[in-house]
Amino acid sequence: MNTTMNTTPWNAGAYAGVYDESRRRLMPCFDAFYGTVAELVAHTVPAHPRMLDLGAGTGLVSAQVTARVRPGALTLQDGSEAMLAQARKRFADFAPAPCFVVSDFRDAPPPGEFDVVMSALAIHHLEDADKRALFARVHAALAPGGLFVNAEQVLAPDGWQQSLYSFLHYDMARRLGGTEAEIAASRGRRKYDRCATVAEQLAWLRECGFVHAGEFFHSFRFSVYAGWKAPGPPPVGADE
Picture (tube, rainbow, N blue to C red):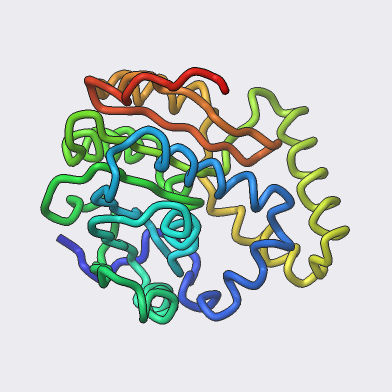
């Protein structure tokens, strides 16, 4: 196992101190994007779930979820020590104390069984074959009925839509106060992206045995999709 490799080919650690600050400017759909992850966890897995955050970075998605759901245990895994240092600060007073694992999430997940495996803006750095292999490992690490949810950048179905995704993303970012330097840096990092379409990724989840695999949020290049390990989530309650 390689325990020091950063999954991203660009230097993620160099952005650790400013990552969170820039997210709201560079992600026009910030609240709905992360909020969808939190709602899926809150409503489809048992109380006090054992949670694993893959490619956790500064712990941003874990923070959004734990503000909504109190975990029984929380593990954050990332290849960048600098990113996890920010996550440690974020969760310094959190109980139960999280476990922080510095390792590439292309390796085996930390030992144990999880009720939730989540990720945000990380898996799109992997080649498609590595994504599929990761999905299989996630499925194996989940308890029956467990949830895998990925808040992600995705590839559009065709080139015209992809160009529209990019234009509208940065147009909205500028209106939210994103600077040209931030946008230029984002474009530079995007050269290393290996995005796939939502349809492809849902098909890969189903191949691994996930049930009810579907997309639960979409705003241009940002998507939240999920699947459950059989037997799947509990029945949905009636509308009030």
